Length: 374
Image 1 (tube, one colour):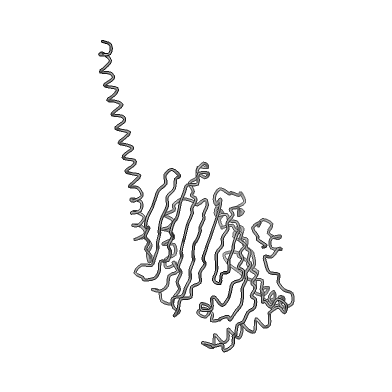
Image 2: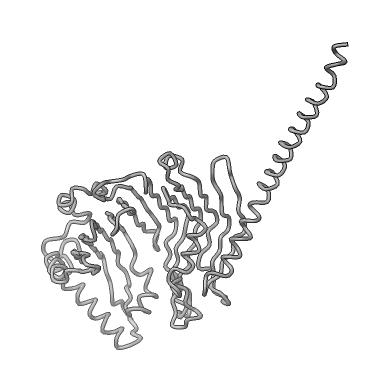
């Protein structure tokens, strides 16, 4: 009899459990649908913005994926190109991964780790506007749109397997200058804080230049300081000058039969004031070759001037021409001490400038620990 009396209560409880389960199941199904639909909705919104807000340029994003468990999203095949043009895309990025920086989140800051793979930038120069593509038609237009794709602060940035190209469309043949195998890494952009604004976040960069020569840069930066505080040490070793003859003829005009260029430069900027230097070495230069042809009086004048300067300033032992350019930045003006640069080239004829970074610069800037003497 007691069981019969309790039976209606069990039925009521069972119905309540069943109803609650259906509610949770419905919510779960709804969330799943939203999760599946969200990438398509976001992709559509982004492509609408890329199609209409870039002024002279237009963009397209092929695919977007979300990874909620790690707080990340991935942009696949982003392209930006000039409107109504048959030029190649200005920018193409194979993959961009944007993930929440959890350590920054613990400090109640929202910032992101960004990994960019296979970025290709194509800059084109020309006397004709329709053949020019430098991305500065309306400064900031397409860059601002990219900022919408990554709206949070950046904590770290990594770029791999990228290429930067520059070419002149007025040349009868294509002679691009390319930076290949570009790699960039910047760490702790916001977590490395310093009360006096000193550059504290480390960065590294490397790339391959024409002629299989390389460029390397490293230093520190403080993006939270205003004006920007940073240090840089950059070197280029073994760059063949003849590899850019076609572009030199367009912009100078001047060409080299042979010659190898090396560059070492360091620069520090603190509180809007910067100082540094560039050491340039040109070895085994031949400007005027046998059966040299001149396209203009200007070309002849530059060739004669370069050949004479090489003959006068070349060191008798090393057979190179070297110059050290003192540089400074103050009150939004960049200055090169031309007098000191000239006399350094003259002195190198008898007392060679040592190749490599200048040890005195590091000594006088003890806060810079980013030099590479190798």
